Amino acid sequence: MRTDTHPALELRRQIGDVYRVDPPPPGLHRATWLITALMREPHDVEHHARARDLLAVVDLHRRLTDALAAATDPRTGRALHGLVGHATAELMGANREPGWRAAALDLLDPDGGPPPPLEHTDAVRLFTLAIERRHDRCACADAAD
Image (cartoon, rainbow, N blue to C red; front, side, top):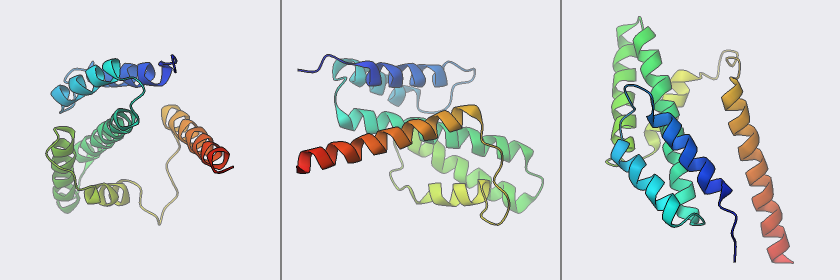
């Protein structure tokens, strides 16, 4: 029996922090449900994946709305406005097609230019993801033995 609930607790904290801003991002009801699900079943892998996905979409939604506010080209503004709509729909649980994410990332982080400086929180997330993936590979290799 596992008693360690730290990953679920950390995900609940991150979701709570994201939705404490004023105004909160869309999807408050979904986030509340997810926090409750993580409290009830802290070891459920599907809940962990949904929580990470929610946090990723919230971050992408924030980046898109910031880019929309700073957009000077009307064509870019229209594209950003549509992508913000897709992000909002996904946060509210109405959109399950992740194809819009690739378009949003292409628009926000074009391949041709130098990448923008990495923020501290993004660096921590990438480091955590790398450790989790390495841990998953090691666990799979141990299970295969």
